[in-house]
Image 1 (cartoon, rainbow, N blue to C red):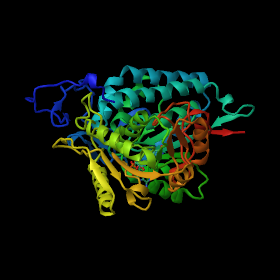
Image 2: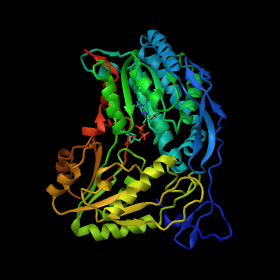
Image 3: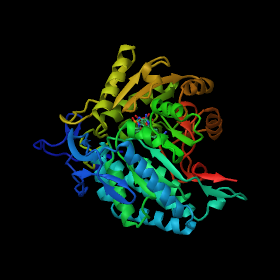
Image 4: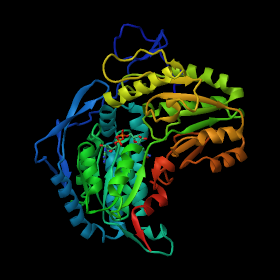
Length: 498
Ligand code: NAD
């Protein structure tokens, strides 16, 4: 992540954002300066137009790096969720019959327009969510565009999704997404839905609605027929109304396991199709024959990417006992060199925690780890004095019964456990209610195959971590949910097939 060649000594005169490197090193600030073109107030996007909420109620979207208000977001009521569904249902009458090649043109245009405005969107995403600009610029934006491009390619080839069969759209789909990858989760949801010929009502997370509403501008510029995509904003109540609406032929939810279970209970017996992408507590497993330096980089990427706000984060490190000391020593060295601070600075590795509530949750689980007897190590960096930040954290001496080994922390906190044999690694890795992802680091191909068969996880990365591609399906087992997003499998969840 940090090449020493990029490090520069600067005079300590500047009192800017916390870019402290040990006690002696600082970096010149390298702020991204593109204009995010934010509005003071964002309305609902229904039937191709921005409309003010009838209640006149708005809520604040906060910049977590400063704690200050960025914009006001409309609070949708039930009648507006209903209006969004009715608009989507009307639009489905024509959109659902449009030849695939025509739907493809719209998806392609959306992808291109997103690329055109990528810098502006990256800054908006970073300011609204707290993630480092390096990540929103190099990961979230290109991946979101890639999802639209990839599905533009699928739209006129749906017969290949079900070779020899027939594939038809479902109708209107209701979608709710979380705050960790706001624009990317939105792309994962609406690109396959539109490629398959469905219309959409989507609710973004309440702390990160801005790039969703900016995307609505792109949908208008792309000439997407009105009502094909509708955005309603607000909190859990609005989400529940989106999931429960009688016009929804299918619902797709990404978020916590707790809310996923509530949605299942709410929709039981309605006959709606449903896909749920929920939480995770992934094992990242390092064997003694692994390339250790490469594995350490993979562990760091696995847990500190996006401040650990990643459903598939490698939050449980399982390391073979004979190399545990070596791995932990190198990890501590890497933690000391992570740059935590201003998310808009291009040098920042770890940005702001998404919200005050999430910071409180991380603090309370870390306190539980200390209380239960695990050994805490935190990077000795200086945190900014404003906003919501947390030190990259490592726990050793963790056992399977500790809360930090069982519960999803969704923050920059790694729990280290050890193992001696392959069987013990498999048993410990699978000893979780979740089953979203896992990582395996080893020199042996046969061991990779054995582990990927034995691990109960939707994705198993080998000698890498957090790699994504629109063509590669993603999803979970057990309490991590069901259904897949991406690739042919992801499209199947948006189609009736016969
Ligand atoms: P959350 O479940 O609290 O909220 C997710 C979304 O659901 C938000 O938009 C929220 O407003 C909405 N919501 C809240 N209550 C609802 C209800 N009763 N009915 C319908 N919608 C409701 O989760 P979060 O804190 O925003 O996100 C973090 C969680 O998301 C983590 O558990 C993470 O693992 C998970 N996640 C999973 C994936 C995946 O692909 N599996 C991807 C990203 C995040």
